[in-house]
Length: 252
Ligand SMILES: Nc1ncnc2c1ncn2[C@@H]1O[C@H](COP(=O)(O)OP(=O)(O)OP(=O)(O)O)[C@@H](O)[C@H]1O
Image 1 (tube, rainbow, N blue to C red):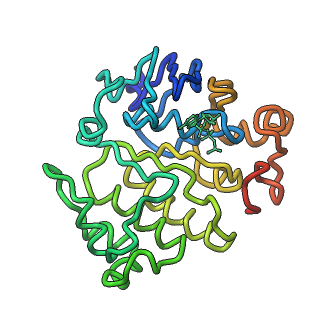
Image 2 (cartoon, rainbow, N blue to C red):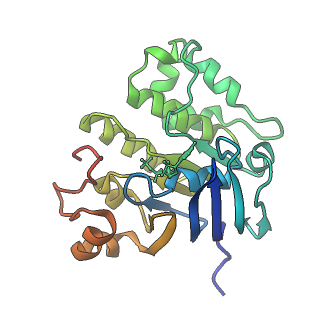
């Protein structure tokens, strides 16, 4: 018998401000490796991760379906409860406190009841140790992303969700962030929202594609990315090396 999935989303429907944004999202995240959540702009990727975390904006709510973490139903529960279960989140805007130092940003992320793995974080990201007294707002975009990911690794997390970590970053910085994610993925399973298909090819074992608020494909990432017809149909691009971006993604 294969082990049960770490995260299982089934038949998820959600509304925000009266719009039916999710209309049947379903997929599983295994307990190891990187699962990429893909799809064109506006198809519901961020809404899906926010629904998992109880963070739907503007009075948004889950109207049907279930979210299960390691066999326990967590549908619609408050964010702090889900976080305490061991779900880490690096949001799209990174959420670092610009006025605080790197060390203070990490300190604020300490979750009561969890061990705090400073040695691990500093081993994985020596740059953060060197820059511990620097204000986070003066870091580069890639370094801020490092802080956001480091905060999720500081605590005992079972799953880390990272939303578009390379958005708006220069290609050289994308490579740095890819390395950070790769190191992180050896410690904890990742659900990664990403538009950069070169990065997905490098990191992800599994892929899920959404379209118009629904899951339209699940399977091994390598198979999806090797199928030019499928990537064109589902993502609007051919995923050839050197052309591996979606319309809004940067070159990779
Ligand atoms: N606060 C909101 N109020 C109303 N509609 C919203 C709100 N947030 C998201 N939506 C709508 O929900 C849909 C899905 O948005 P979502 O941000 O989940 O997409 P996405 O796949 O993450 O897109 P992107 O790649 O552009 O980040 C979009 O049509 C968006 O306009």
